[in-house]
Length: 271
Length: 234
Image (cartoon, rainbow over the protein chains, first blue to last red):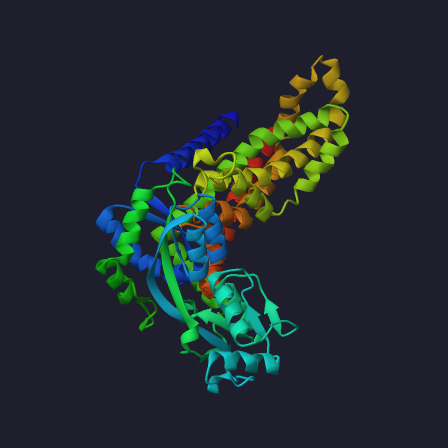
């Protein structure tokens, strides 16, 4: 018995050593803090291997809400940022955490709701009108409520529509885009999503895309370089290569070629 | 909604197909949780035994604290380890954040109170029973620890399994400190969360069935070892 126990202990100890070794291996990689919309749609699974093939640099994606992504980068825990909150990104640079910000691609936000469309938003002229209709009908609306890029954009749209959301019909979930869509499907609520997550989402139940196309629902993604002065330990050279590749013709084409269910989900627009 | 049948077929095809990505995730899950449980046992068993044998001021408070920590929410443990290992934190220099090592640290914090608190109880009962015999043999308390732990080993296997159950089932801590990075820190539970968020409910449930099967295998192994030991002891 004791002999066997010793063998088992040794085996587990070796596993521990291999974990430690894995953490310290010399592979070239960067940690990218990014949003759930880019990860969940499958974009990274397609474009990162192309970058890695070319440069030998692995990109490790930590997919969180934009608010948390900024926080991770502020603390010096990510080498690079790819998020979608232009105002927040510019502030990040102004505060001295970032040295450069560039447009990479865009897609748009869409309003999703139950097939019956109780608030009648499908015929609205503008997104402001659509959101006013939801508020007037007091139809259930599922908000991310997690300070993500999508959440911040949603709050700006309510503001522009002159509506202060609140009350029983407005439900702040504090969840990522996917869980919010799952919940909205369960309670037949209206919800605002980025188009990529919506198209790739597999559990729509009764939900349908009801309103899209207003310019105010434009969703710009930006890539940021993090300040070397503030965080000298980060892999700035490798992050710079990733940043430049995203903006290069090759990276832009890779983004434009990405499709889910026959639909292009991101539109490259680097200058 | 996927039917239960489609989740089961998904689970079966995942297992039978030996999907390399799945095997990698399964292997990492097992490695992280087993290493965490081993480390927590090496610290927790002697700690629990010592708490059972020594009487000192504040011991009651320590026992209560240990018992309360069994209910520590994984997300809180994860957040504490994140702040500790973040570059801006005290141990940031180690560069452990977003690696399997960070996940082990978080799970040790979750599992240690369970193992120490339950071991204390087992050893205390045994000690009350054999206290006079052990004292008459002239054993010091320090020497009693290994003896009592060895005598309680059958019960302690269940204690360690409870710790393993906690480690393999939790998602809040490994999500924060590991980051659910594909191919680096993605384990069974974080993969289930990701697939659920994509609306891939059949795949998520299928992964859940695979995870449950794995935990059952580990428990079956421990049960058989225990039974064999019981037979030898007569």
